[in-house]
Image (cartoon, rainbow, N blue to C red; front, top):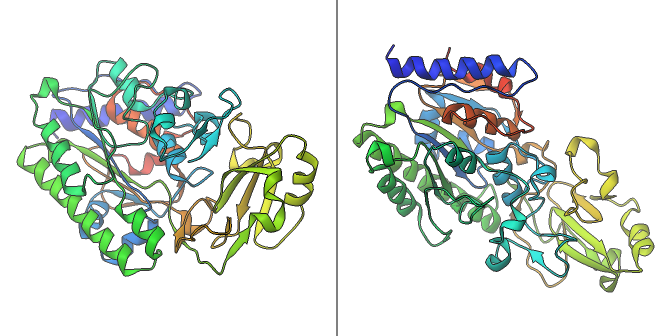
Length: 411
């Protein structure tokens, strides 16, 4: 085995040994030139999409590395909360990114949403947690983020060494080429941790439904982009020493205009402020209407369950953050809570993380991983301590367990 191979084994063994105690992992410096740890997200890649035959490159990485039967997203199974969980190891209730749409009592009258860049790029919404690239930069390790929620602003005063403002129209191949251009720098100036984000599979899942030809085509194109990345790493002599961790934030379930519960059938709209609607809904009562809204939302009904935030089931680890709405409603998988006049997608997410349709992709390949390992389902908070060990930084306090991924690691 090469010195580099020994260095990876030493790093992982030390991290695992530390995880067997109550203290966080202690990471030792690696031996030899630093390798690249690359975290790739394919938004909306449901775990069972891997068996569709549309992603031969990813399937080959899984066969030659490790994969999970289905990684459980954190609640709520939405895009921003789970992307931030993956890089902080904190469930949304602790990271502060509790929903794609949220409000904070400390900022009255201000609403955070994915599309409102003026608000969403305020560090106030992100500073409750520290993403891995901030920890790495503070440790003197260069990072590069080719898109990732939260990566195009300064969090706790720190940005990645290389980053790009999110642009949905920046296509998959261009994203790969930009990352490879950053990798072309001399070793001393090259990132040791990088992220890459693809969104086409999620977009197709929403517009066409998870079982559609549109999703299959998006899977194929995204897989080809990852193939382009691998060829680029091989051409630069970096592939054999790079660890690739490919994940999704959540899965996708079929939805339809025939399976909608309308909020105004439950409660007068003048009595509530709907922070977010869909598979999961966040609802605040207007002042003076608290009892009316509670009576309406908490009544038993088919296909929908609502809770006061303090009564959300413990298994969801949700409801203590000030940004969680006063009432949270969860639809039965395949149903949504909506408003009249709004279109209904053919696919959606946000449902119970234990539902198989919400299970997310996890594939890991590189010198740190054994070949042909299939892991049982695990929680996505476990990805963060794994990444910290691979990058070589001491993880921040988090909700994950590196020991859950131990069978996938090289010994």
